[in-house]
Image 1 (cartoon, rainbow, N blue to C red):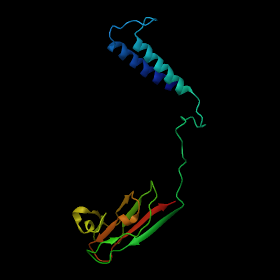
Image 2: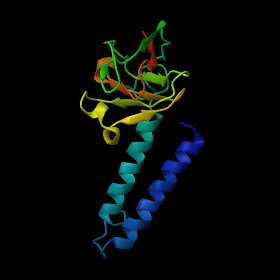
Image 3: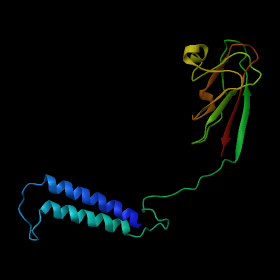
Image 4: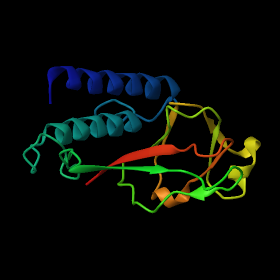
Length: 168
């Protein structure tokens, strides 16, 4: 452990010791002349310091129960475009699984003039009060399990969205 880490632990221990002394009752003296609860507190602090100085078994300087996984880059991306069939006719996105820690990005086409409603259900995508609105070239990302959870609707025929996500 670094000297700075030891100083933090010692400082915390000293604060706890001061608190214990301030709160302790005029206690019976232990064989060394101190309150027994203070002796136990000092023993706990010494054990904690000893554990913090013990060498780790995993070779990375972390406690034994901590592992570090390297971050992995995605191996490919998926892009697809979706157009509702008609105004007021919601369209469900096709099914693509979204990897953990990745998000599905939905972006209104830059040629759109109307509004695209994005929602988690067919019925909500027809209600402007229960949808997220996208205007031309605007996007949003969702960390969801699969793209099929999203429905879109349009206010002008022939307008749509482009979607993309990373894949492992």
